[in-house]
Amino acid sequence: MAGKIKEINAAAFKKEVLQGDKVVVDFYSTECPPCEALASKYENLSEIYGDDIKFIKIFRQQNRDLAESLDVTGSPTILFYDNGQLVGDRLAGGIKRSDLMKNLDKLLSSQKAEQLKKKIQQVETETDVAILGGGPAGLTAGLYLAQAHLNTILIDTALPGGYVSTTHLVSNYPGFIEPQPGFMLSHFMSEQAKTNGVQFRAAVEVNDVDLEEKKVKIDGFETIKAKKIIIATGSRPRPLDLPGENEYRGNGISYCATCDAKYFEDKEVVVIGGGNSAIEESLFIAKFAKKITIVHQFDHLQANKDAQKKAFEHPKIEFLFEHEPREFKKNGTMDMEVIVEDLKMKDKKAIKTNGIFVFVGFIPNIETFNEKLKLDQWGYLQTDDEMRTNIPGVYAVGDVKSKVYRQITTAVADGTIAAITISKELE
Image (tube, rainbow, N blue to C red; front, side, top):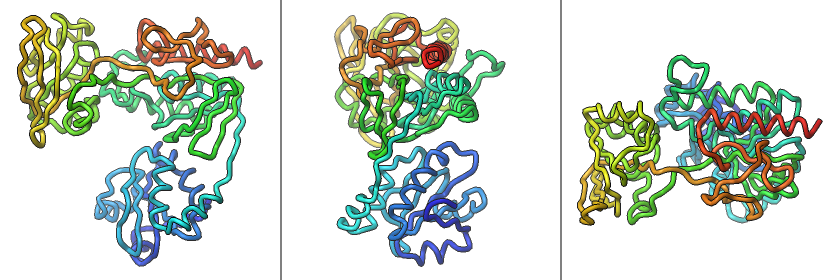
């Protein structure tokens, strides 16, 4: 095994970990994209910290009893030990290098930690194309570019898949007779891109982007120098910016039904919004919740007709039209209130509920970039028909660009067009 890493099984856990000094343990699995994203970081940091901290890997699938006894239920999961005692943060999923380093540093004196950090060497990697974002648009662009034998690196601050990976079912993507779970459709796309040669830098921190020089610095030590850059950073759910929203985000207020609906079995929830996302996600939440109240500012829905029909016919779903939320309150665990205003009568009332889901649109992820990019009036990136932005050699695809419709199919079309354009330009 590369790096200063030792792989053990459950039989050696007591000796190597509990009777060890300072130890970090990686529970990993096979066919696990987050584990693959972590592997190079873990290996690289073992070279830096490995003389002072023991780096251990344990194959979770063959050591289930040990994993379960430690409440390790997913891969990868990183645990930190100091003289047999569990310390620091429990890291899981898309683990960032900085979070690893923070916890490794805690095992050492501050002086020693600073000394070891001086061993980190800056690296510059050259490539033909750097893709910022790993949703359907970025993955499709990567697939086409790799098949054109162009060296392509895809960079994502999360795991590949984009927002679609949080969608419970995708029923209108061509080629699949049965609706596909969003995370599986994302998985198919990322594996196809990887198989064709796209290199991934997943769950990384983007420190700096210089679009004119075509340089992207990640994780504080690697600078990727490209001939072309594709911006495929997508968009994120739009917050309401109401009192109580930030305080109870993730603790009573959610923006992801796939992530959180399961926690509301036989509970009551309020959904804010009336577009496709709000209605389709409400139908999914209805598999768990006993009652859903949809609060919408207009007197009609904007969702597609099929979703509307299902929602209106669903016995668990009720509607409160021409109302807007004004404040969120929390009285206790799964005890929330939404203060809503009647837009006609101008009076307010409180709706008691167990949880709140907000689906009121999206905003583009462009904070990383400088102000030289041309935007439309809503803040999305403007491009020509071949996905070129106003900065030479920089392209924008998917939900981050200005367009009429934002669907998975339109995103993959954008990625295709940008990749073909770049392939011709680099011939």
